[in-house]
Image (cartoon, rainbow, N blue to C red; front, side, top):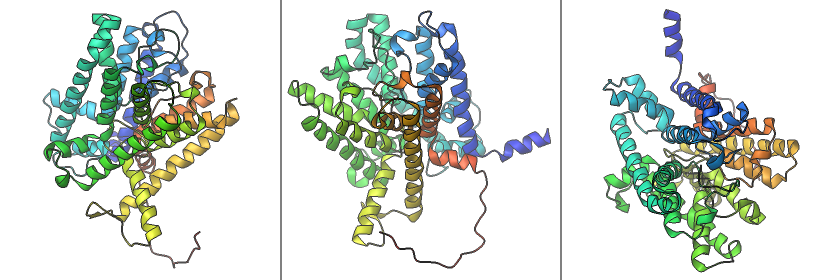
Amino acid sequence: MNKILSLFRKITPFQIITSGFLLVILLGSLLLYLPLSRAGDSPCSYLDALFTSTSAVCVTGLVVHNTGTYWSTFGHGVLAVLIQIGGLGVITVAITFSLLSGKKIGLRTRDLMQNAIGAPQLGGIIRFTRFLLLFTLLAESAGAFLLAPGFIRRYGVGNGIAKSFFHSISAFCNAGFDTLDKNGTFASLTRYSADLVVNLVIMLLIIIGGLGFFTWKDLIRNRFRWKNLKMQTRLILTTTALLILVPAIVFFFFQFTQGSLKERILMSLFQSVTTRTAGFNTADIGSLKEGSRLIMILLMLVGGSPGSTAGGIKTTTGAVLLLVLIRNIRRNRNIRVFGRTIPEESIQEAYTVFFLYLILFLTGSLVLSALEEFSMLDCMFECASALGTVGLSTGITASLGAVSKLILIFFMYFGRVGGLTLAYAALQTTRPNSGKLPEAHVMIG
């Protein structure tokens, strides 16, 4: 017994986080594998159930079966729960039940929560958890309320309300799952490409969920006053705005050149917003120009912001790397932004995350292109979508072989848990450098 307790104490918070996500994925796959989860008599392999469960828990949205027609009402309920758990985080959900039951939250649990959500400090972590839960409840309820009238008109009261909540949860958690398709295709929200309410509500939920809970906490505490916001909040807001507006302008002038002005604007904005981890689409991704798909690949790899429901390398990582480039070109000593200096530790972490994602992305794309009879661009798109936990696809997901699906399952898991978290979990202990070796100059460039 003492050995078991000693072993438990040696488990790091990062190992608990990674194991927690894995256990929920496995439990979800078993539930989806049940005949009760399917709408008809269609067969379902365990690999497909595992793929769908991973996609839901990792809030990705890649699917091998039509979500609206293949899964039953029970299956949709399982997916909604898995998406909610994945969006909030397994540890957050577990601590929520502890709070509701009135249990005292110990120091180890608080430390676990801090690592799970990436909180800058341990103090006030329980208050922040309460804020996170309340904010999520209000955002998803408001989204469902706004979506309900249109869905009720099309699907009836009961089914319309159910779809409103499902899509509100899916959008806020940046999951991209939808249950609207009735024609056997993966059309997502293409039938709503000109619907102002659906477009705006879904986009707002995606942006709100993707900005991160720390960002919203800072905004609300400072009453949205720009000068009082933290440097990280300002950096996130600025980067997010640029990543939405610049691609939207490109899409408007070079991709969506047909249709009414309203529809062109909505489609350009929607594809720009959803590409950074949401997975919904109002345009047929497979028919887009290669240049547009390449832009979407880059956006998918960037993803959302830290402490959010989104994946990717994160907006702050991309911003820091760009600032490093500017600093090196100008030959400055430090990176200064919004009156603050970014520490070297953050820069090194940004490099680490970027190269982890880049190596996996390129390796996965090469392997998929070798295994499957699809173009390299399609394989790159699929890998970027899985790594960024986006869920957009050119339509090849269902046709992939078993090995390719397993690769994407790992990519989705890696993208949701986080590269650094997974690395820290694998490397439980590190050996400190015993000394510094002589320096040697390396010619660069």
